[in-house]
Amino acid sequence: NMPGAHLRVLLVVSLAGLASADESAVVTTAGGANVSVSLVHATSTPALPGGALVLAAAAAACSAPAPSELPPASAGAFALVMRRGECSFDDKMALAAAAGAAVLVVADTLSYNSSAAGTPPALMELSDPCSVDCAEGEVVLNASRLDALSRQDVLNGLVAACGSRCAAGVCGLAGGVPPLPGARRACCAEDARLDMGITLPHPLPAAFLAPAAAHTLLSAATAEPIAAGALIRFSQSGGGGGSKWDGSATQILAMGVTVAAAASYLAARHQHAAAAAAAA
Image 1: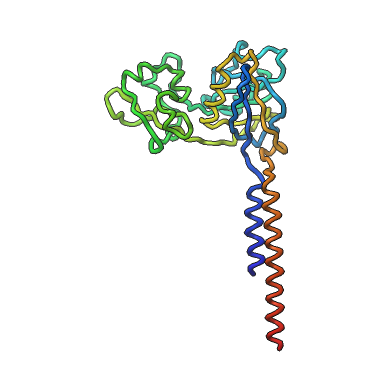
Image 2: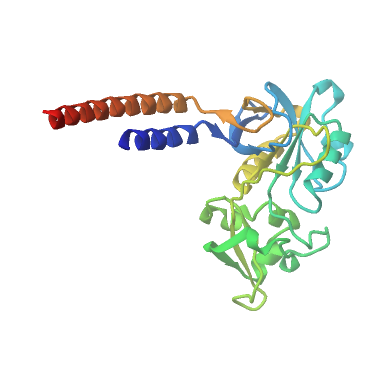
C-alpha cells in the first residue's frame, strides 16, 4: 500500500517541524547594541512574556540578590538572571519570586564545588565532571597561567584561555592527572540544553541558557550598569507548553497531503486498469 505509506511518512516529516522547545531573546544594552541568544523555555512554567523587561543579573548562584543588583522600582518589570548550580531550580525560582522578578533566567556557566571566594583556581573542581568534554577541545594551563586567573575568570568559562577552541565558547577546569606538575587541563563545555523541572506551584515564567548563550547574555548584561537600561525581549510562544509554531511546517504539511493524494489517485487508476485488463 504505497499511497498509505507515502502519507504516513510525509505526515511524520511535516508534523516533526510543527513545534520546537527553543525560544530566543534579544538583549539591548543602554548603548543600543542588540545581542540575540537562544534559550529553552521551562515547559512547567507560564509562557515567556512579550515586550521589553529590564535585565538584572545576580552575582550569587543561590542567595537573594543584593539591592544594588536589582533595578529601581520605577524601572518596571524585570528578568532576573541567576547562574546554574549550588541549589535546585526550585530554590532559584523561590529567590527570584521573592526578589520581585517577572521572569527567571538560569544561565549555565559551569558550577564548581570549590567556588568560595578564597579558593584559588588551581583547586577548583567542577560539580559535574561530565559537563566538559576534553575530546572536543582542551588547553593546558601551567602554574603561572593558573596563578594569573581569578575565581571569576573560571566561573565565566575561561573564555580568554580556550573559548575560541570550543563550540560552546566556554570551557572548564577538568579533573584527572595533570599533564604537567602544577598544571590543569581546561576542556570544552558541553552545550547542554535543559528543560528545567520546576515543581513549585504558581511559578514565574522561566528559561534556561546553555553555556554559549549564557556567556553571550552575561557579557552583554555586564558591559554596562544594569540600572542604565539594559533590556531583554523574549520571543512569544503559543502558550505555557514551551513550544512555538514553525510556519514553514504548514507548507510542508500541505505539500505532503498533496503528494499523498496524487499518489493515491495514480494507484487507483493503475488498479482500475489492471482490473479491466484481467476482465478482458
